[in-house]
Length: 181
Length: 64
Image 1 (cartoon, rainbow over the protein chains, first blue to last red):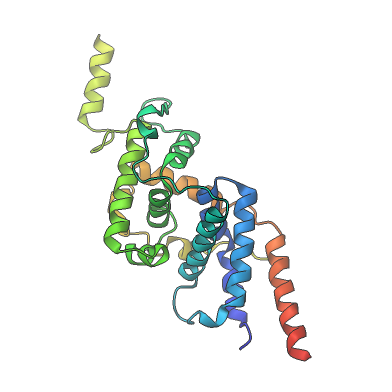
Image 2 (image 1 turned 180 degrees about the vertical axis):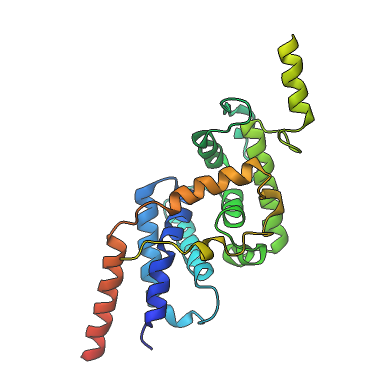
């Protein structure tokens, strides 16, 4: 069966999102673009296995993600353990009170273990549901939830944001006390 | 070539998909700012060219 025009335009429309996801996985634009290219070729080749009416974006993200991990295995790079030990040593200094610099954020994000980073990106930025993200990552919904939650806590830790009520009474009190002293 | 994104598509599924990363969350906001920045980058021509090549290869194979 030939590739339909719908499928083609779907691929084209998904490219910006695929690139964003690829960059957040690889931290490298060239590698990300290679990954997107590989994804498009694979998607084209196996277009018959895509069921029209289902989520093309999720289908493409799955291909991209599989390709990413298979490349990593080929490169012999080890996937970081979920409980990496970088946190304690990493110092990211948020600029002024509460205004978090985007560069600091990017640095912190790159420090997350891959499984947590992809989970928080899929849920918090790419707009997937927990169910879709679980499908993309080939794991249980509960696993995605716990990865997102760990990713969030880790980022808060790395960026020095307190857990509940980021600009709540406590931080205000600290500022006032600080000013008085 | 089309490298415009569909606002409706980009936002699909966002509301409620992650309460912990909602609009009150600094992490959630930064995450979206980071990602949206990437999404709105200009897409290299190579991808549109690639799709065109795949398309041509397919038509060529069919007409043989």
